[in-house]
Length: 396
Image 1: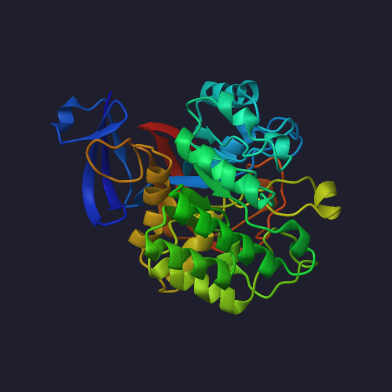
Image 2 (image 1 turned 30 degrees about the vertical axis):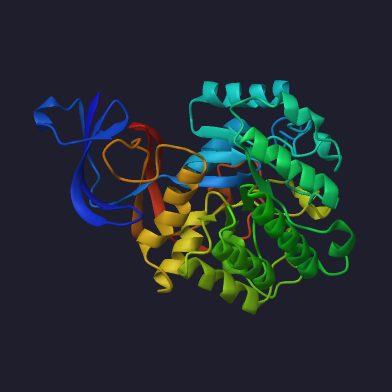
């Protein structure tokens, strides 16, 4: 099938252009005679961006599908302009067996909404010690994680990194010293980050640091990156948006940090230390949230949040934002998307950058409604999302 996308302002990580984009069978191609096109899409002068890629998402499936499931999570992702996600493994059962992993991957493909990648747990059932299950890990696994927990035992992490390197998978790490976090969550994050940066450096093991939130942690990551350690990192929209909020006011792990921490995260985006923005989309029922469950949904509002905090504020360009929401995370996940170039998949998100909207609970696509932004005015409305040239979402 041949398609032509006309009248768009195309942004990727390096260019801005008013252009016509040609697509054949879901792949961007060189130009052809428009008379050959099966479909011509008038983008009506909207911004066309490579669809976003989220490296840290919770769809709660299996086990907690009253909060979210693969289908509702996928629709929520599309509403936010995302066509690819990496799911965490803190489901029930945990993703510690080929059976659970393969079931999630199969059901995601059968839905045919977005591309779903799935982590495997570092330790079996998050027990903090058992690594034998990694020997039967499916070959398609790209990342392993005990997200929601840090791997507290030093020797277990040392052995886990050796295994990860031998198995050619990357760790994506939640950094938190459990014994310390109840007393000082900042030191809890910093201390484990420093340990794992050093391990990654000495063992030459690829590591991706999840939801980095402190000045100390991101500074350590930059230091070891500069030494040549094979490490990458992400920050979340909510840690860029908020500061100086107590855990009683905003319950999330890692907690909302200080203004100095927030300022440093933004500086580390500007100097290239931060590789990706990931949402840590964490659906919870109203009852669970009232009982203290940490986190909130964010995949539907991530672009608008980051566009406001980073681009409209003048901190970075829209090209830079595309780099950390699309190009880099696609590369880190080994996906052929994230750029508007010949040979890449035609995953496009069309956005009205000037349109403001009120984020209403009744408009939320997620099964859960635990957003911090309900009732807020946001800018940058996602209008349409195409995955390999197929329209998957349209704002009504």
